[in-house]
Every structure is written in structure tokens, then in C-alpha cells.
Image (cartoon, rainbow over all chains, first blue to last red; front, side, top):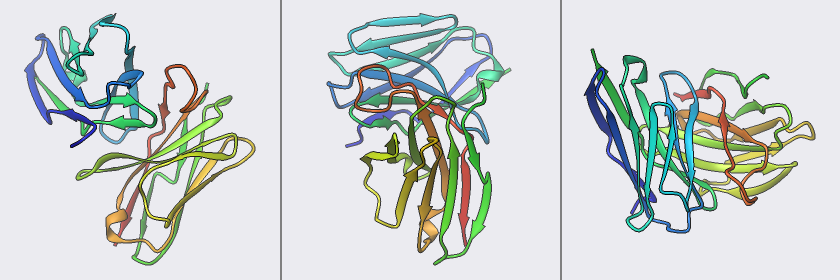
Amino acid sequence: GEDVEQSLFLSVREGDSSVINCTYTDSSSTYLYWYKQEPGAGLQLLTYIFSNMDMKQDQRLTVLLNKKDKHLSLRIADTQTGDSAIYFCAALKPNMRFGAGTRLTVKP
Amino acid sequence: KAGVTQTPRYLIKTRGQQVTLSCSPISGHRSVSWYQQTPGQGLQFLFEYFSETQRNKGNFPGRFSGRQFSNSRSEMNVSTLELGDSALYLCASSSSGQGFLGANVLTFGAGSRLTVL
């Protein structure tokens, strides 16, 4: 199976919270990342978490890591239309392995 | 601080031709990685260079090659182009590269979009 898996689509209303989920297979992944890609652009790092952490918060972003279940999530609070993009989960071990990306659509 | 610069941004080639893509990393970054992004396969790792040495290589045929210069700028080359090589090629730089302890935060360029006809 794929090393890193994500659901492909998520649609939310402006002002709601968005939760993007990711699972990975290699439990020895040392760091896990969330990247954002807007149309016509490269990937922009949003945040990352070390594998011995459970949670990391950075302004509107909250990352939760369940190492036992190999599950990573990204919560975006108060989602705005400008958050519409593709979000990639990635795991480092030894190369960077990316998920297929979740296309987030924010409706006004 | 200038970001990662990739050139050209767009190019069209025909089957059988070859192409060279260029990447200038962030000043001070010694690691450059290349990725291929397609709708069907997503983001796939091509190779990584650190201080002019290829450190890691993904599962791509030998038609895909790269190199890194002493100023850390990198080029990748694809020979004998096939239709399936049409993709967005992304370059990313980092200060430490893979294999070192630490988060290996990648900074991506905007990509070079290759269309093979």
C-alpha cells in the first residue's frame, strides 16, 4: 500500500474548522509535515511535528499525532476562503514521502 | 532572502527530445531535492544532492539524471522524453538534507511544468 494516505477532498463553510487526516505506514518516521499548495505554486511548509510529540499548535493550526495508530491530523480553525488549496501530509524516513494531497474547498 | 528559483517555468517538448531544468536554492542551503508531481502519481521523489554528491535516488529510470554545482545550484535532465514525463517538476532546498538529524525543512520552488507532445 501507499506509504502516506490522505482523503482526496474536503469541503467546509467559511468560519468552520477543517480537519484533514493522514495515515502513514512507517512507524520510524522521525518527522511529519503538513504542506500547502496553491494553484500554480510550489509547496509551502505549514508546520511539522517531531514523532515524540502528541500535539503542536501554531496560531490557527493544530497538529495531532497518534503514533500508536500512525495517524496525523491538521485542524484549521476559523477556515477562510484563502485557505482553499491542496494540503499534503509528508513523512521523513529516509526520503520525504508525500500523500496524494487533500483538496480543501472553503465555501463562503 | 530570495527563495528557490526554478527555470524555465513552462516548456513544451516532443517525444524523444531531452530537457534540462535548473534550480537555484536558497543561499546557504546545500541540499537540493527534486520531485515529480503528476495527477495520477502525486509527488514522487527523484533524487537529492548534497554538496555536489547524490545522496538519495528515487525509483525512476536512468533517463532521469541530475547534478549539483559547487554553488549548490542543481540541474536535472530527462533524456528521450516520453508522454508520461509530462509533469510539474519541483525542486526543494534545505540546509541539512536527508540523513542528518533534524527536521529537514524543505523550501520548494514554484516548479517547472513540462509538457511532452
